[in-house]
Image (cartoon, rainbow, N blue to C red; front, side, top):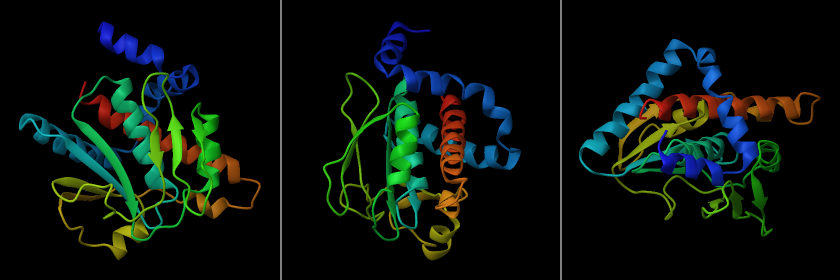
Amino acid sequence: MSQVLVAARFMMYSEIVIYIKNLDQRGATISTERKKKLLKIVDFIRSKQKLGQVAKLTFICIHNSRRSHLCQIWSAVLVKYLGLDGIQTFSGGTEATTLNDRIVDTLKKAGFKIESPGGQNPHYRIFYDEEIEPLVCFSKRFDDSTNPKKDFAALMTCSEADQNCPFVSGAVLRLSIPYGDPKEADGTSREAEAYDDRCLQIATEMYYMLSQLT
């Protein structure tokens, strides 16, 4: 293992490192069909790398409140953890709402430190490493000014967004990788479990995908 990679992992919060180390053993939980889709994203990243370009991944769900944020956050963290270069991650929705509080709580349990400035649509500061600037996450449309406008991969993380947004302007790859909505468990005894399970599933799949590039 390179000294640079060891140093990068050392500065990452220990709880997150422990969480990630358990993901490698979970590859068998990913179906063959899911792996085929994830490998299409790998091919996109490699094609950009061969051209010396940055691979931009925009994860899209209908409200940009739950699943798309988990994908953006975990893929960004895993890019750093695996010592990868030339990959940027984004998220957006077909409409803007707010980053759901339950996602914030789930990420805190995984080891993230999160600051909220408050307000109607808070721009959360999500910390995962002692020396890396936090991710700034908030609900926005996929065509928000903070997101790429061309030459990116549009990754549809929910079936509603897939149906409502059949064309994404500027995307050179549009791929449906839907996840079940943990919102279905809101207000029930399974709420926390449902959010933790979705967080773990997404982290597992992002790890599998990005580890193909190491």
